[in-house]
Length: 335
Figure (cartoon, rainbow, N blue to C red):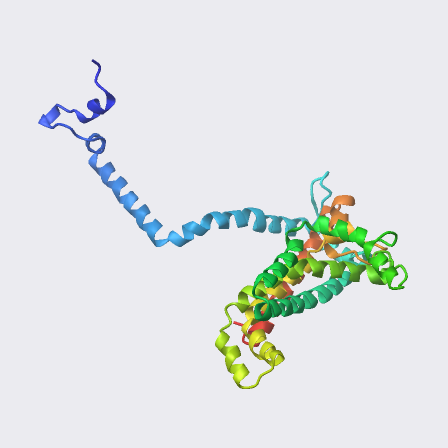
């Protein structure tokens, strides 16, 4: 009968020793100085892993961040100084793309509309989500509160394109639900998305409706960490519900408010799909935003270099606003 591999490895007759394992056999066949170097290297690697355990856990995420965020950002910065149309290789033109923005008839309205959209949506959705969260946490903690939280969170998990399409039909001049309801109380039809001075406000209201549920959940979670003893002491001292809200709730949620405002600002400057679905940027330039202007320059006019320059300007604006917000909240004791 032919001996098995295990029997062959373990059985040795040289030097009178028997039943050596695989590791012992390998150690005898490898020169001692190489074996010692290998052991030393393994120990060094083991020590490095122990000392940098946290770094190694973060390393895969960091590599993904570099690959999908930092690298595209650097490429965008490079293309912003070139004339690049996808079909032709990029040609270095210096600051010409940035100079062209000053005379672009669409870039200035895009900045103006984006700023107005941000100034409308961010404060309203922040205050509204905080007030609703405080109301649910203080008076409706049972099934009613859970129902309202779930109902308000449904728009959050809905696609922005779906939300924009549904509201476009609801706000339609002919046959729209909103105009039909207004007609029941004697109000005439309103062209919500076709009038220059109403289109951007209508889009902003839809954005607020979609985002309130998300920020509501964040505020509600923060309210659960506010000590109840503070409210009980305030009641003993005769503080009204409004005073409790202003002097206990709002200061206790300052860090969460900073997060909500920062996220809301970034999302507002990046708005595209909702505007594209509801108005397409019209009427005229009434609802064109910076991201939509970037889209039109890059994917309709194939001016990738110019679109990259506008995208880089948008990136710098968001960074500057985020830094200013952090300084404001830090100055008020937000850290």
